[in-house]
Amino acid sequence: MVELSALQREMMVWRRDLHQHPEFGFEEQRTAAFVAAKLRAFGLDDVVEGVGGTGVVGTLKRGTGNRSIALRADMDALRIPEQGSVTYRSTNPSLMHACGHDGHTSMLLGAAKLLAEEGGFNGTVRFVFQPAEETGQGALAMLADGLMERFPFEEIYGIHNMPGVPVGEFRTRGGAIMSAEDLFEITLRGIGGHASQPHISNETLVAACALVTNLQTIVSRRINPTDVSVVSVTELITDGICNALPGLSRILGDARSFRPEVSANIEKQMRIIAQGIALAHNVSAEVGYTRRCLSTINDEDLTTEALAAAALVFGQDATMTANAPAPGSEDFAQFLNHVPGCYAFIGNGEDSAPLHNPTYDFNDAALMGGAGFHVAVTRRRLPAVEGPKRAGRASISDAGRI
Image 1 (spheres, rainbow, N blue to C red):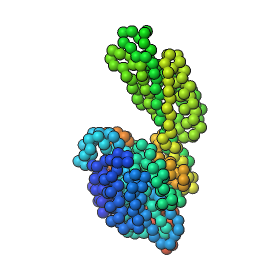
Image 2: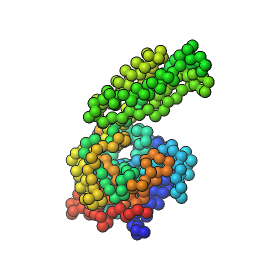
Image 3: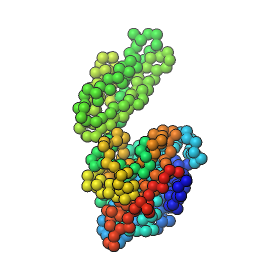
Image 4: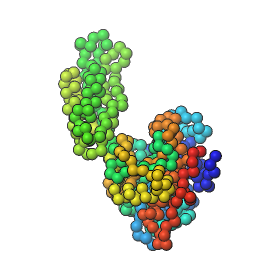
C-alpha cells in the first residue's frame, strides 16, 4: 500500500462524498454549496455562487500581477442507475457520477487549497466549477450570466479522466482535441393500421428502418474520407404495438465532426436522404437538427505550455502529445470561443470501466496528478516574481493505485 499524502486523503473524502450525492445538470445545489464552502474555508479572496444557475467561481489573487487564468471543472452527474459495488455508491437510485465529474471537482478543489496555502504565483486564478456539462448547456449558461465580464481571465485550462489510459499519464494535443456534437430527430408521419392489412394503411416503420440504414451512407459515401465524422442513430420510437402498424415513427441520434463545414454537410445530406426515403414510402418527413457542442480546439502555444507544466508532475515519459483527437464532445469548447486555452486527459486506469457505464468509478489514484497539473500550469503561466514553487514529482505527484 502506497502511503497517501494528507491532501490526497482529503480529496478522496471529498470525491467519495460527491459520488454518493450525484446531481443532474442545473440541479447541483448540494454540490455547489459543498464546493463554495470548501473554497471559503481555504481563504479564497472571493467565492460567488449561482453563476449560470448552479455554477461557482472562486477567485484567488497573489502578488501584484495583472494577468489572470481560469481552471475549470464540471460538477454534474448522469441519469444512469449505478451498478457498481463500492461502499460509497450513489444514494440516488436514478443518478450516478458515471463520467468522473466528482473526481474533476475534487482535483480542482485540491489545487485551490494548495495554491491558497502555498501561493507560488503572481496574478489571479479563477476556479470555475461548471454545471450541466453533460447537456452541453452549462458553459453557455455561465457565459450568458456574464462570466467573462464579472470574472475576467485571459486563458483557460481543463482536464478529463480517460479510461483505458494508465494512471499517471497525461495526454493532449494542439488544434482539435474533441469533436463537435450535433443532435438530430427525424419524424415520419403516415397512416397507422391493423398489422394484418398493411396494404390499406400507410405505416412508417419500414420507412424508418430504411432511413436508419441509409443514414449510414452519409459518412461512408457522402463525406470526404479525410474528414473524420460519425453519424449514430440511438433511438427508434413508434406509436405501434404488436398488432398495430405505426403511423408515427421518430428517429433520434447524434453526429460528430471536427469542422463546421462537415457538420453542415451532414445536415444537408440527412435532409436529402430523409425526404427521398419518405417519398419512396409515401410518408412525410420532418428533420430537426441542432448543434449542441462545438469542436474543442486547443491553442497551439498554450498546449505547449500545458505539456511543459504536466511534465513537472507526471514526468516527461508519461506526458504525451495525443496522436488524434477524441470523438467525444465537451462544452469546454464554448469557453475557447472567448479565450485561448487547453483541454487535456489524464489516465483513469487500464482496467477502468468506460465513461457513462453503470459500473464506472473515478480512480482516486489519479487525484494528485490532476490537482498537480492545475497547480503547475498556474505557476508556469503566472510565475512568481521570486520564482515559482514548482509542482514537481516529489511534492505533488500521482500517489499510485489505491
